[in-house]
Amino acid sequence: MLERPSAYARAAFTNGYEFTQGTGYALPEYPFVAPPELGAKQLRRHPIVIVGGGITGLSLACALARYGVEAVLLDEDNSVGVKGASSRGICYTQKSLEVFHRLGIYERIAAKGVQWSVGRTFAGDDEVYSFDLRQQSNFNLSTQPPFINIQQFYIEGYLVERIYELGHVDLRWKSRVTAFTQNADVATLTVETPAGSYQIEAEHVIDASGSHTPFHDWVGASMQNKRGDDRWCIADVRFSKHPPVERHTWIEAPFNDNRAVWQHLMADDVWRIDYQMAPNADPDAVSREDVVRERLQRQFGKDVEVEIVWVGPYAYRSRCLDKLRVGRVFFMGDTAKIVSPFGARGGNTGVADADNLAWKLAAVLRGRASVTLLDSYNAERLEAAQQNVQVTNRTARFLRPADGMERCFRTAAISLAKQYPFARSLVNTGRMAVANTYTRSSICDNTGGQSVQNVAFRWADGSPGAVNELLQWADGDLLVLVFGELPAAGLQRLRQLAQHAPVRSVQVLGPDERAQAREHVRDINQRGTGHLQGACHVFGHAWALVRPDGYLAATGEAVDGHLVAAVEKTLGLR
Image (cartoon, rainbow, N blue to C red):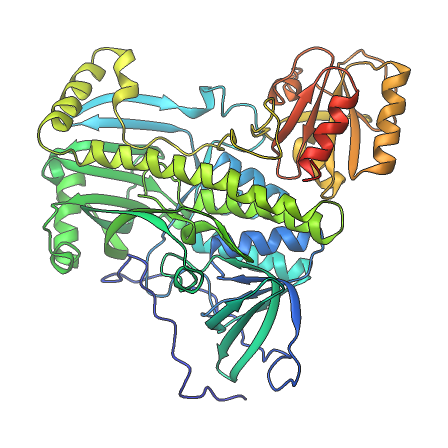
């Protein structure tokens, strides 16, 4: 067995979470395998090197593996999650669940996690308002639910399992990047392992290593930073008699000195409860087990019986890079931006970053698109990052208002919301994450940029299908959905387009319309209604050009030069 040289130090995590009390979580461990570069005389070049095996890096690796693209992933640890730390991310949005469905791990997540759609918001002892996301039009079309609560390390573990099933990606554990250089031709990384150090070259480097990445300094990345004084104590607990399976939020909780509290159920009957603390609170004091138990008794009663799984203090800041690509390095997840934890906009946007870049890298490396396509990652995901930082900063200000006008506004908003429905939108306990719309994209026209939900339809043989299955069938090519019957000239143009471009076409018909193409589906689901056309934001006889990440590139009416131009633009050829 290889011995670990003294030069290699165990991973030291400084992510804002601190382990203090509790029985903790059992995490899997993966074996270190000496890479072929150790002892090699010649540098080996890889098309893609991913640094960081958290939820973002693993999502990217899994997506590339599904496209059959070779990559190397380097992670300084040999596990998922963070040893000795909390559940971390827990709330996964419909868009992320749709991505996980495409990656082949959704069923595992659904079986393990907890679905929820009902949320209740309280101020003092009064319920200010409640909502059911399944009743909202922006959530009720997909075959995936609005949200699933599950500890982040479970998803990371499922991604690792799936990558091993798919192949193509070399997962290298206990591999820390200690130096980096790049030029116009290649990037070079120095990697430290238990068996010694080595160097590798990469055409593209993706930094998903987290908020304390050294790549910011290595490439001279500039950013916008903001640090607040808000402090929280997180408790992951099991109850002998647990509360309702709903998201409960207190803006001013009487059992927490009139500060905010969040309450969510996760997998394994573990509840995540976030308590807002005083700005000057001592982290060690507020997270002592006796203090946490006393806090739980104030909330749930003196006779409450709980097992403390994990407890720890948490502080957050917001940060956003000015550019998400510097030379050959792409930043994603927490290396691209850091948001306060309100509205589940952290890990979910990291998954979206990965989904956005994966199909573009695959298209370029498979020779199906121009290398300029990669520039669109910065335009699209920087816009999303800036939006998410702005939204979560507004929530933070509502929950921790400054004295004066901000506090006056919050008091008025809460008072009005108890009586008048119009004021409920002013109560900001976290705007729940949704798929960001791209308005600055260089590869979408002004009719595109929106996410297409994973709606149901029927295949030609009458069996049920969904949008993700069409995207999987397209296998990284662009997907043209043509709604309604077509003139002969339109059919001929679609055939010619498929012969000369990475495009696959499907005719989408109503229940009684005549099929003109072998590849056709019926826009009708198991309830007898059709939502595919609405999900693509088109009506009547029209077409929708859908990207491999489930985003609209463009829409139009006639199958003509506009469609051809949209295909070229989406592939970075215009």
